[in-house]
Length: 418
Image 1 (cartoon, helix red, strand yellow):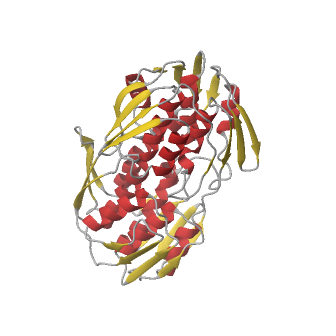
Image 2 (cartoon, helix red, strand yellow):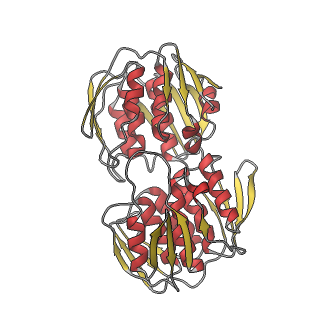
Image 3 (tube, helix red, strand yellow):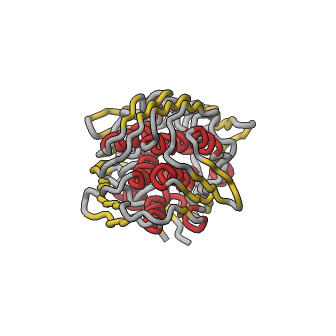
């Protein structure tokens, strides 16, 4: 099993290119199931989750032409879709596999989808997906670990989710695009990745308004066409490298990315003392000699993202002062705390609050990644720790960060994959 060996102490400096967004790419790839036309996607990130999803789509009968060239393109042709089933062995490691449910039901009238896996960061129930599809006329049963769904043509409906759910909103938007009549989704997720999916569907001929607000309206159409679409840049990868530069006292420029969807993250980094400058498709950060501690509370977009909580905990470990981090999204998203403590961090857990007292320095040690963003926090901490840190189980990193060791090395970090 691969590990990362990181020798801490180097200040990151230089330029790297940010990849396409994992959390946008996965639902957008699933949207290819909605049409018999060819979908051509560019700026696809080279990630384990993307490769897994493409394999899943291929076994359903989708013809997948692999990515090629600098644009990271892939062409998907679902005209031969003949197996509307997502088996457990392909979806057990990837939560986003649930995103095939809505498109399969809308296009084929049936779907058999294994209950998904992914990171063990807390409950992420699929009941909101099921409730919404049932409101649109689907008959759904959960048996032996699978969701069995059937429907004629789905009917437009008014759906108010009990909680804000990103994948639930995305699944329902895709299903509603081919439904008969109007669907209104209330309490919809507002994340930029939801907007990116909606924009892709519109390019295919869907009629969608309100994406990016908490009320989305979809006028169903009989058929969607093929299209060409570029995936948005990854705001979480962007934020992670900004945190890495901030923690190490570095100066970096991140290319092919945007600050438009990172307001809450950038505001916190500025509060910590970083100087951040923006260009049309680039972000530059220069860190102070020592960061100031920053308290935060995670909440759905546009508030502070739960996917950046662990990385900010890592920079607070070596900042000046005491910070309180309150996690409101997932009840089990402090698993990185024990590993950060192995590096010498001073962190106390009180319910869903973490009290972080900055220390003068961290010490290298062997640590274990427990989930995707926890892995990123250990990388950030290892970059500033004295001596070598060995991070085990980095397959989590491969799910969400493209070529992390190479990108960090390009910024001057001493990183080896072993």
